[in-house]
Length: 168
Image (cartoon, rainbow, N blue to C red; front, side, top):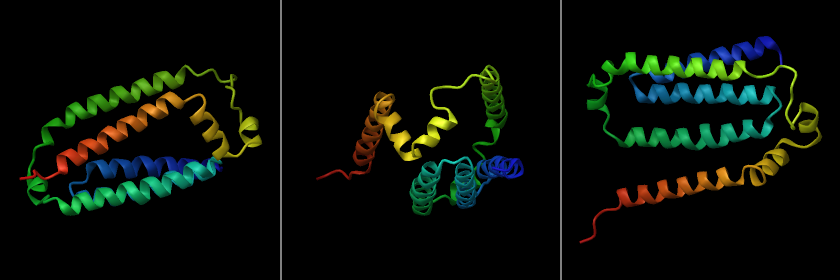
């Protein structure tokens, strides 16, 4: 991938995610998120992760953001948009975000430049991306995968219980 394309995509993703967070109109925020997800998929394609790019488009841009739009359209958000409830929390949010950003910089600064893990670019090129992701997901990371599926199951059951009307 060209360094200029990578720099453009990185800058566009940062700007679009910032715009999605700062918009008062939730529909505009979701539209900025869709554009940001497409930029992220292009970055995945440029880095040789075609499977992740497809998942990014199908799952995030296709399913989750459509769900967000349906929820936004169903809810009555006119009163919420006019309320100034969240204006006092900006300094606290900026402080937390800055702290997390510094933590990420400190953690990624401890990476040894010459050391590579078990999955070097040559090892990844020997297999397809989908096969490599499946192998890792169902061998080394099977417990976190099952925990995530259990959390999603609990969330679905909770949503059904909350949405269920009381029977008389």
